[in-house]
Image (cartoon, rainbow, N blue to C red; front, side, top):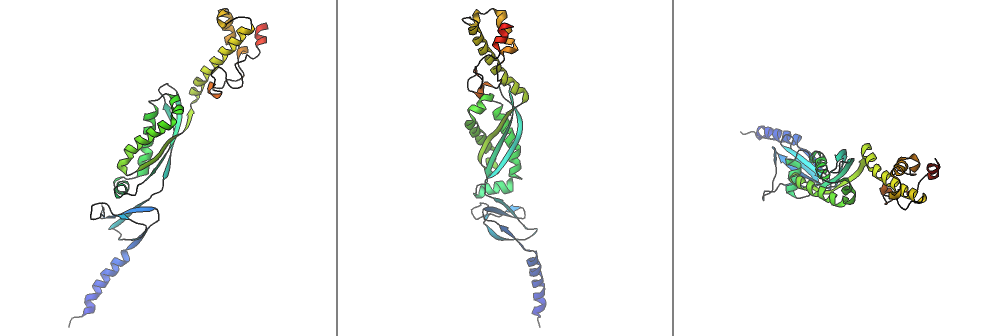
Length: 261
């Protein structure tokens, strides 16, 4: 007579072993995931990758893997680096990059399966794009056309990021700090212009119609004299008038000492 108990015991044993090995993974609200089985993404009948919706999902260790990512906008700060502009001035420039992963099955597949680490790819490529764009510009263009430059950065980054399933939402230049040498260079023209204006004022006070009417030796001595120094040597941009740095109005300091000395 057939003993059904002997037949059911192995079956129940196998089912129990399988059940003991099954685990669950939870996909949070705002996250999307793709389930991998034996190294391949599960797909719908139309061939698109199957997107796992938020909630509990069964996975079998050694068989399934669940790769998930949140759909929020992520911000990546790109550190300061030296940029040499076309005009030869050197600035330390940093930037901020923001991205998200669209919810389309193809983009999720590209970001979660085809790309090893989307954030790492952006960190590696972002500074390179900043460098290539800015080194083709004069330094003043960064200030005058910052919005347009940010748009160019975003467009170029998106062109690369598309194959990684990434949508670039923002790419903006942040701090732009001149090196010590650049600071000295950009201050020099303002100082020269301020001294020139002070010399013109001195010529008028000494009775000359113009600087050209002054004897060249006298003009040279006055121009280089410490008595011709203006009260401020800040860059001309501080006041918007290159000939009149803020706080001086181009007036000579201690001119009477230079006249009597």
